[in-house]
Image (cartoon, rainbow, N blue to C red; front, top):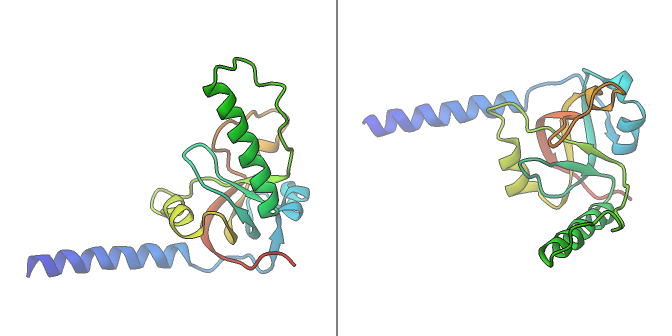
Length: 163
């Protein structure tokens, strides 16, 4: 009997969290990475929906690219740099690195499980992310490292590739 009560509590908590993550927002149309980057100051603090290609979300990096090809270019450059360092290179500043536009995705709230969802269900795919836009790390007076948040995610879902 105690197991059933505990199981019901866990299920109830998960349902409540899911409902919170999928709750209503003020976002109506889905924007592209380019549109968000061009209008980040006006969008600051607003709930938006943005579509793009999501590679792997890691502890210090989670980026939404315009296309799979751009994400792959960055992954390949990182792989080349890593391989050079493993072989003993001490200066990798001459390695080419693509400068593709991308949005930095924050980790979400403590209970959103965004990274878990992103990595298990949506890594290396086109997605729509709903979240709060932030221009904080685009300011000339602020320097952000690692997991900067231009979008603080609330929810994520699959999306078709661009046409």
